[in-house]
Length: 354
Image 1 (cartoon, helix red, strand yellow):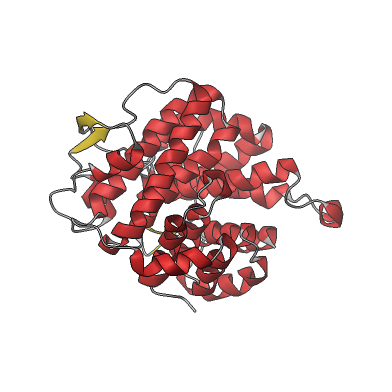
Image 2: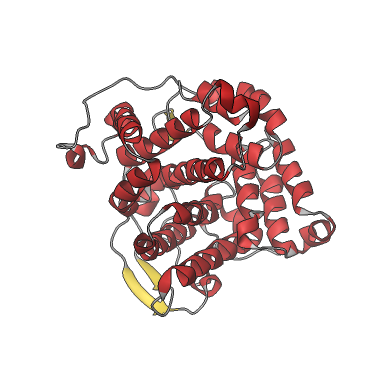
């Protein structure tokens, strides 16, 4: 089901209306992963009016000119072609390890959607390698990895073409926990305009983690802590901007999902970039005051993860689906009701599709 959906979507571009992101590849992966694959084609049918045809080639990306091509959205198609060739020539983990440190400084690209799309693609490939998805008679007919590799090429190509570095910011005091650090992120002076305008106004971030992280295992643990803190914060702060604040959690979770495919030497810089992305979204869209999540607490207490994700799938909005996919991610080990309440908050505040 996922392969069929990806094949349908790969004839479309990664953006629409100039620069709004095509969320379909990420949403369908989350739906399949959450056990709602049977709804995927109907969901794509409903979403298709938002899609545009894939852009045309502008200027070929090569080993010699890739640096000047970085951050040039006119070359989205050319970057996708480039990565398609690279992935045909070398194992996907090798390509990812080469390009991850080149792309990571531009993690704010496309309002963090390219890194999120990359995280979904990598999760699929890791599951494919582990035999958790695909196989059986279907794999004898056609290689199930092909559209999944193509999806990685699309994700990396989108990231390279939209690469955007965050501005240099002042370092504020350090904080021991990710939750405390997110609480201390100062809002930008003027919360208006689009994402690119808002990110240009970033001024200062708290320092987190407060001490140097030792080794890959601790790096992964700190990253899980950051994602969990952003999920919990959404339950009380989503009213600031319920769609955009989703990315304060989904962007670092995309990095977390990618870590197992990367050499351990790339994990520490990945944590730093994930913190910057989450703090940037928090600063750009976070409200001045928290709201209570008590109204959702009773409901969150009695619903399990599968039931909460089913609510998001029935709601249908791509942001609600992707946020539930993160808030309920088993890798985070979040069994508390506040995480489920956060997913319900997205369903409550974001306009439903169905």
